[in-house]
Image 1: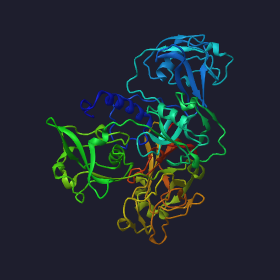
Image 2 (image 1 turned 180 degrees about the vertical axis):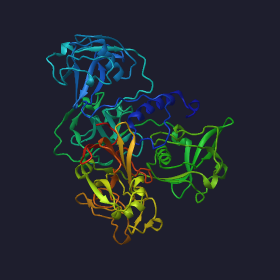
Image 3 (image 1 turned 60 degrees about the horizontal axis):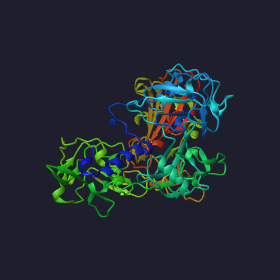
Image 4 (image 1 turned 90 degrees about the vertical axis):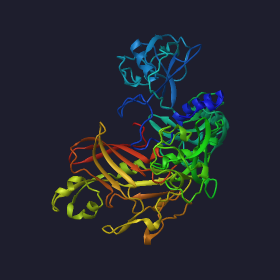
Length: 596
């Protein structure tokens, strides 16, 4: 934890506000195996693909924060709930969905004023145990004969559910520092972007305030902070600047003329917190690299020291670069003997650092505190970083996965190379060569939507030669393929090494820079994509031992965060998969962790 007793009171308040903002700004998920710092964690309800995705809020006149007119956000529009058949049981569902422990009472006949827009729910019959209002029986969403004079209101207890986190309607992606990024909005459970037509500082102000920052410094257009994937949800947004949410601004739902080259972004004003003064890079050739040194309190005095490099990786380096205002991490170093820092700062003062990647300061990450443990010591073995103002951003195209999936029964004698590279399930070692393996095959199309080229971390002279397939691997694990049961149990897995990272195709006007032929340079240029076709080795999951049923198929690219990116949440694609023993169906494929 940051020692806030050294900061003025206004700074402590700002820390709290910015931490709340970061809950909505998170653009790097927890790495696999990293512990969650929360002692108590609220678990979001698991909804079926058919459940309407809604968002609730309390609004109206002369009210406290825990009471008001019930408003529902659905299909890009805010509306209300009719009081017909509404009961305390429905109020319980509303309050819990808003993060309150329980409902105290409810009020009919627009006690908190008449709302506007559609009346989304009428004749609700809740038991009080539903996870969301959308699961309560009703006339159907949007089916109502009510007027806004019948808008219902609720009063919730002021006690919050421990660990509850709101699902925000807006988020920032692809920014190099806190408070900037491509603007994305949530509609019907799917994140999408905003077209930059008429994008202005007034609209950017609304986004920044909604996320807990100050006013907007800039309203950016033309995909300046990277191009998104998926739908464009809003076009020609017009805000007065006083709205509480970008969803309250007027906009055009027609986005056919927009492309992701026109994705809108913002750069918000974020108050100076003094975090940069508690961290420095030492010994580097330029201000963007060096040994990491932190300022800590020891025996009543502030002293500079180093960070233990054990478990030091990309996520920790990302936090350092952001804290210093230097953008993204380009490398995380576990040895820094080539960067002679201040001799007086050689001693280790921080160890066991584990970051999620979203923290504003290295001191906010999990670490050992005063109980240091670092057998390697500091000095030449201390942690270091190099930073960059830009970063790549790989995004897997979910539609290509969904459209190219099929099943193949392939004889073992044709799978010897795949067997040597561990691309088959473990039971394949126990079967004769004249048997078959059942393979779930598909293509992967991997786009670089970032601001710099994606290059393998390993230099060409350290690539690994694989004799069987007769090619080099620039990354031993570039992609993971997993099949899960609906309760999350892994039933099959596969992986793909990056034997070839190249520009298969590019957007119009962009030239290919990387190709694998003749031991060429590997990488993916900004605005280009690499296609791993369904008919190449290891581009599959071995489902020979999988029983018929419904499953979740998941693909993760760059799973070990070996190469730094501006956004890791879009490195995941999830699909629903149905297998009847003879055929397979892949459907509802989507990017990221959002439920569909």
